[in-house]
Every structure is written in C-alpha cells, then in structure tokens.
Image 1 (cartoon, helix red, strand yellow):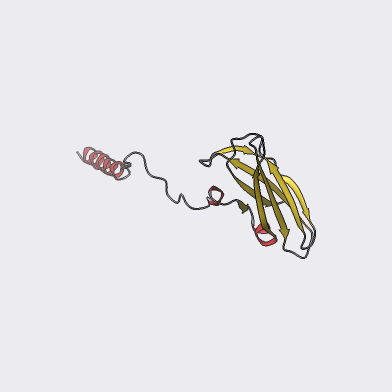
Image 2 (cartoon, rainbow, N blue to C red):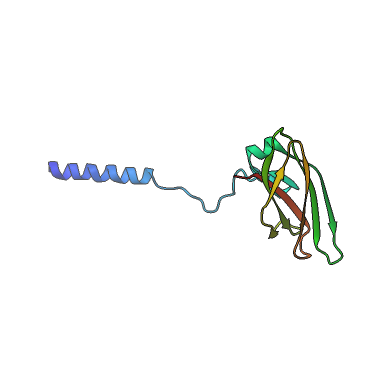
Length: 139
C-alpha cells in the first residue's frame, strides 16, 4: 500500500510537471523588431563597422541611367581622419521593390589623410532601380 501510494504520488507530480511545461503556441507569430538594423533597406550609403563610422563619410552620390538601361552610381568617399586608412566599398543594386539583383565585389580603397576619392559602380543589367553603397573597414 505504501509503495502504491508513493508511485501514485510520483506519477501525479510528473503529470503536473509535464502539463506545466507544455507549450501554448498558437501557431504563426509576427516578427518582432523588424525595423532594427535595417538601414540598408532605405539608405543609399551605409557604414558597416565602428572604424568606418568614425573615419569615413560620403560627400556626394550621383546616379545616372546609361543608354542601354544599366544604372551607374558614383560616390565621393572622404577620409575624416588625420591618418591613412584602407576601407572596402561595394554596391548592392536592387529592383524597384528592394530585392537584390546584383551584389558587386568589395573594392579596396586607400584614402590619405583627409583625402577624398571617387568610386563608381555600374549594374550588369537594366533591372537595377535602387542601390546601397556599403563601406567597411579593411582588415
């Protein structure tokens, strides 16, 4: 009788524990924090890391449509530091809805003290409507 009571008590405790841990998922959930860290969706120029944020700025961006329909983008990248730096720059071309149609390889760019250099990117086809120029510190 004592064994039966102990087993019954353990079984009841286990059942209570399992139901307390049961998940109450209600199916699909909406994503949270969808506007956090999505600057690339709206900006034409972004800086990827702290080093680039402290050292680099973009003075001007120019875009034009070439006769064959491709998008050409040029940007003036400026070194704000009093030292020579190396950064990497690329361009992501997007369609009218913001979907990536081309991601160019990163180019190394060496900037002397307080110097400004121009970089240019041309899309491979006429699908590009928007773009984001991205800069990161070279390592």
